[in-house]
Image (cartoon, rainbow, N blue to C red; front, side):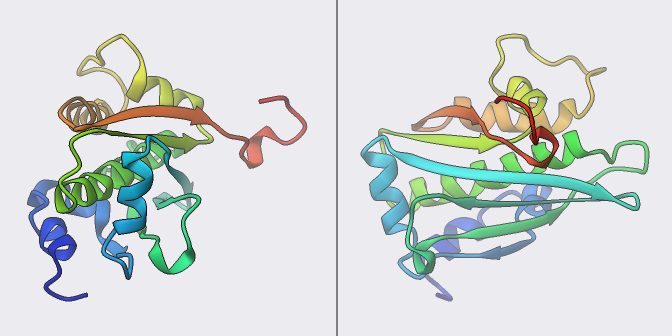
Length: 173
């Protein structure tokens, strides 16, 4: 897939955001199947983040697409030890999806469509999709502002869905 339009779009990601897509596998079809779902208003993706031993990580991928036509992204959550927590890692996964979906939208010149992002952290979803603007004192405001800016300037309508995670076992979601 070297030299494909999608690879080129990913390479144009600003340097300051490349950490979010540091380990990335792109779809064999260059995002065509995902683009078709987005255009139909049926795009779906999910992300998950976690922390262990002071290291935060996250992963992101689309849902409802044949395995050979998906992307997957893994990253390490940026920040110092005090910054690293599961909430920030969840945001890093959301950002990874937003970046790759933007690259797919740019590659396939999507002018209208929809993508639903699923995540098991309600607070991260509220931060990204809520009405209140985050202040500089809010935890992880840096990542939240980037996500909100990217979604606001997207040709795609972004929605969200809270899904059950391991911490929700035995609870209704």
